[in-house]
Amino acid sequence: MLNENIKAIRKAKGLSQAELASKLNVVRQTISKWEQGLSVPDADMLITLSEILETPVSTLLGETVTEPKTADLKVLSEKLEIINLQLAQKKATRRKIFHGLFILLLLVTVAIFVILILLNSPYLNWNYRDPETSVIGVAFHAFEWLFVRLMPFAVLGAIIGIFLTRKRG
Image 1 (cartoon, rainbow, N blue to C red):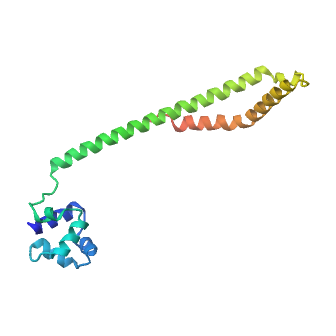
Image 2: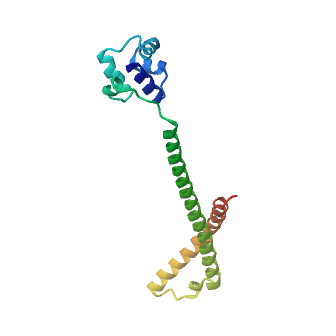
Image 3: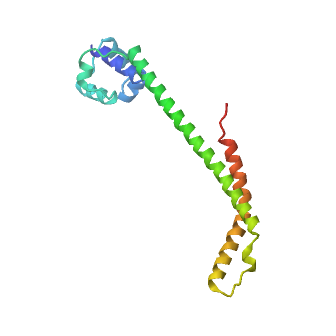
């Protein structure tokens, strides 16, 4: 029973005999003898074995450990499929949100540009002797100046973003 449990748990953990032997600082043949029932590990080695296999000693010594059945694998496969579908839905939702934001950026940028053209820099004719008017005029001019210089990058970035986040297929 111990020999079968060591073998089943080792395989379930995805370890070869050589890998387990390396972790236990023994030769591979020792593991082979344990699994064939030709010898058994001493008490200290049994404790170390249980730690490496992350299995209680009582399980190693107890009833026969069975390898995962195909039904268990099918359930696991179904759960993984559900997780993959959820991740795909999140990705599609994120793509739609970014696509909408890029379209909004393009529309807002174009709208501000049209408004600035229609206003035709009215602050140029203001009376700048009044301090409040001066501050507002300078702020308006600074916004217009900055917007005109950054707008091509915003438009280009929005167009590229719209293109990259479009629905393919």
